[in-house]
Length: 325
Image (cartoon, rainbow, N blue to C red):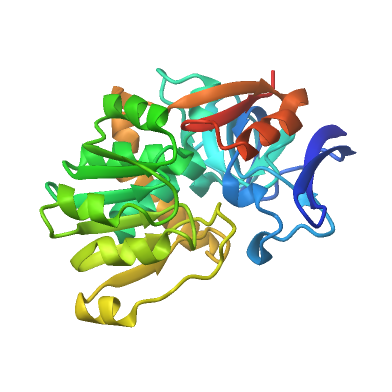
């Protein structure tokens, strides 16, 4: 048996419940990992949303770091005792079963906590900035919700490509801190108040890539702030607004491309492809130290409900991590 947290929708919010459950065992092509750290991700926490529903309760946690305990048949890339970071189901637990295509060896320079901050946030950020955003050097990238875990990761990835980044946040203090990571323009505000400032920064041209980590309140402004042939990427909806005005004239007239990013509908092969993109374009910078995860606070495993409550306050910058040892 082992300890594991499940998440349940209470009707107005979500809560984490500690349970005693059987320790999982790896099947062929899988490996068992002793969890050393995990991170909190908004998508997993928003169990009141249809695609993340947990009305009856479900195991929580979607990424982390740990030590390989055993491997099933046909696993050749990893061995017991190795340190790994990964995406998986039910990571708010003492042990997790991991599919090797969704795992990577932890760079020597990174701690368990730093490694746990990477998988979900940085793979999602890679999808937003590189795969769908196709950001290039000297292009403008707008990040609405730049202080979130994915937002900070997207900032780092965009800057590594040579892009210029505009970040929107409700906190001037967070924006000031992100200047050290290369943020070119910080706009303080919530919702869709940033269009005029974006157009001023880009000399009236707009941004080439707009990443919306906020939700419906920011979507119309992302469309209006986009340049001709711009790419608008919808990643999250922490504002709870699932609907927004859709300006067909702007989308049509500027030939915009709009994409949504969610891990939920992906097949195992598609998840593996995203992992491969992260390994190709981001992992080398983590190995060299050119990119390092930003961790706001670290909680102990027994404090996981308190960690979730802290994330719900939206006071954090970067990632909130839970250590298991």
